[in-house]
Image (cartoon, rainbow, N blue to C red; front, side, top):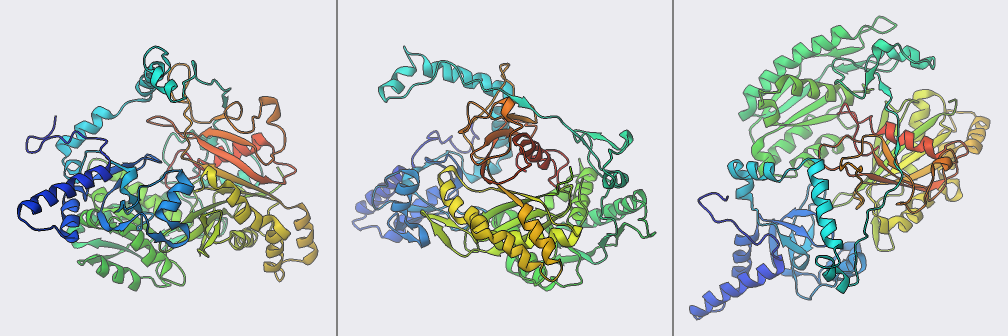
Length: 616
């Protein structure tokens, strides 16, 4: 039932374009009765009064957006940078032909503040901001709509049975040339083993001698969080001497409570983690400085930039609740102010004020925050060939970057992160970021500086690219690494003064590269015959992929075109698999089964979460 003070908006799938036209017609009728003509500004204000703040779902990718403003004076004929006009883009990218003169909806997201949608492809959800804030209404509604995986799969099975019924539900589909198969595809499912994890630094010596640590140090399937165990390098300290907590003065009481708890937790961490081989403390945590700020977002930006000094080890920012509501992109602005405005970026952690205010799970929340702070200060969580992995992802928008995260040890527990500004590379109508060769050369150099050895294999995971952009990706990024041995030659030049030329020449002959595209937003869904989610570690490599690989072919070497679906996470709702596609590989030792196992292991190394996530 709806709240008593307002009726339930029942048109849950009303097209925004139609609603916009109806609202303008209504305003024009009212103006006509007054014997005058409504101005464009009046029309725009009237439309925004009814549509701004509403949520819409797009026709082409079914994603939800919040409408910030409707522009009647900006239409689909407008040209945006390299993509051309909105009409041309939707015709080329989505095969959607827009009616001329359609207004644009400004729907900024955290990743893209300049997101504009044609009204024709957006549908209202019927739930506005006031209802979302009304917990008495929206809380029970969300609870009622939430279903466990078994309920979801059973209802979906009922729907599919109705659609394939040739007498009733299936007839309209067949009239349009569509049909539903009588039975779902039943591909063969494979299950990977869940290996033990080790939080204790006491396991390090065994790993260095290529031995399994004793059973007492094993933790099965991330059964407990890592606190207070801390890992460091052999001669490395995790030091928090000068660090600051930035907060709004309205959160003073909660921040001071957090400061007191952090002091107690820091002593527990230092007591539990013994000194290193040279007798030094492996972990040293001083009391943080408290910096209260009573200003708007511009004042916050100025204060954060002032603290971006070389002597600051870390910045913890407590974002007030009012700023989160009024400034949705405050997180990214603060990150840029702390990290990108300085010559040497300061590590930082963002926390919502309401997270510190929660008393129910305060102790665990504080432990998690401190663990994440220590991880970002250099403390990782947890075959003779040396394999290195790297992740690449692009970020578009006003300030676009390509970001890399690459391992700097054999166990993939320490990483080097870097970024480059976008160069504006466009191929086949797709906007690309800087070519990745420079980033990966830098990554290999960092690996050498940390380990004094060069990796024999580099496995690159690339995210953020759809299926329609694969060919352009091969040309723009894979080609940049492979053509003319660009990556190898770049490493040889960068290490020419640190490494013997004969050693570099030998490394270049043996070096192998594998480039894997990882896609999260896939349409495939898998369930068991008992209408349950697939367990963590399940993968499918035949029947439903472009290049089917049967069980007896998994020991074969990785080759371009090899694909597999992987469910790494343990899902609360319906499990969404990730699809991995090999775009390039010249490896002489990496088998298909090894690549799947490597990908699954990397899903368990997300620094801020003791468990497995969906992507490596």
